[in-house]
Image (cartoon, rainbow, N blue to C red; front, side, top):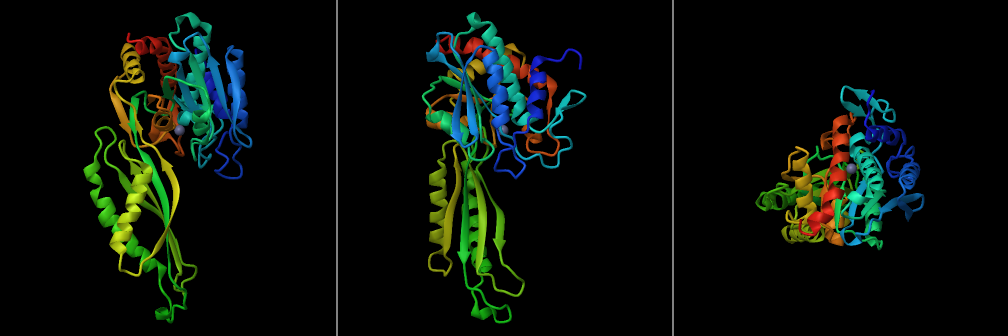
Length: 388
Ligand SMILES: [Zn+2]
């Protein structure tokens, strides 16, 4: 490509650096190398940079551009880890097909990170245009347990608003779902399958548990429909039981993913489900053990917050759609909003449909436009905050 936008050049560099979350397989290299790249770029731009240790070998990069408006500081946050390389052809070799740029992480979320890097570099060149300080946090571990953003939230860097980079098709997202994930295990008694009455089949016990989930738990969810993100959902997504065809299984375990909507609390939801199961199964001989796997917060940023209003203004000035959206997937934004009280939006190039897929790509034009949007947010955020 002849007149390639600098943000695309950056994105190509980022795609070439393998940064698969270290929990996703032996070949995963984690975020160390990509963090070095982000750190170097931010230092070259003249930002104050520090690495925040999160766990061994894993560090957030936090870069600050201070222009004398700390009370209005705006945070850009994007995660550095990706899902596994999977079945992608040439996942680490950025490849253009028409306007599409292919590569692992192209849309989730290196496209956002590249556009944010470009925006902060541009801001650093024109500090007199800024109405707020800018902080960039390139975080580890979004794809697994959000350790990176949780560490950042614990730090003493304070911000007044945040833009989190994830593929939103250049739409402004102010609400998304969270989740409560858990494992349930039933236990019975093993026996030879020629004398099943001497055993106690754990699968049959689990069948009763699942019946309650299907009828009593899933049944009421449609009533909790949320205007931006739709109703909560529940899925029994894995089941494991049995060792051999001629043995009555003594143990059965399922994993369940309940997506929660703004207004719900993951822990209360999980407790409620366990209570329903206990009540419905009371008096039967079905007992189960429950293990919490992951609780994640929903995003619920007020439309009247300066972050949302500034985003709408910038989008409409750029000729982009300025409606506020909700999405079903999660992001680091909900932690910033729910735990640190920072009004946060999600905005980025590409579509979630291509994230985590065997065909990950991002429209090149989206990356340029996202860079323009992020820079516009920095110019306008402080003014919006001050009531402009
Ligand atoms: Zn992502």
